[in-house]
Length: 109
Length: 199
Image 1 (cartoon, rainbow over the protein chains, first blue to last red):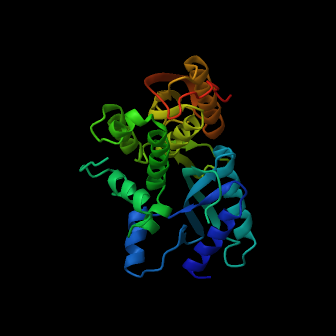
Image 2 (cartoon, rainbow over the protein chains, first blue to last red; image 1 turned 135 degrees about the horizontal axis):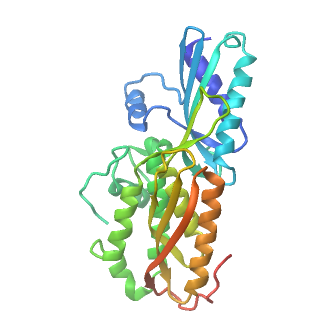
């Protein structure tokens, strides 16, 4: 699984967690915009594999009717559970960094 | 609502957001859709548009003027609050994990919660305290523009209750107080608001 494929898989896991309204680019929106302008591949989630460790970094929006403190823990648990089922990542030690950057009444389209 | 000062945060200004809301078009549209700071700014501007749209006809011209002090005050606060601000920690079960929420996201949520109270528009919202410490104490300071005719004590109580519920649900901070000040009262088009404040 390539780094981009891994990032997309994590993105899929996160947006599948109930209470997540959407994802913001893990890098600043400005850097993401520059990358897009330059035609570079862009994923919303940042993943970094180093040896046996996998670091995941994501910025999310929470639904307003969901408690953010509980949500971030559920997102981390979902990432670990999801990656444990993937042959390429099941043996990696996963660390998760989640920042809630916004709240929304509905999920992003 | 012009302002030549470039806004901090993501690099886009409140003026650009205002132009985007007015025309529905912008070369930065994709950015606005994915930037939390810009989304907070757009939400604030939409609330402000609702407020100015509901002001009495006699006030409307002035309300749309950038020179109007109260409007400048709200815009100034909105500009400030577009920053992501401090990082508020959230606890995790794995010591290797790191969870947080931005001050800007919480302020935008409080602003939105307050704007849902009938007759009220939040003009300023500040979080006081050492919110970067886990479980740190926080005092919320909110200034409100109210429409004439709504019972202010009930409005203030509703705001305090809603904001306190929001902060206790959405953060792990230790809320010490919610200070609400009504700083402006304006007349609504059509007059009688029936004086009902939603609970």
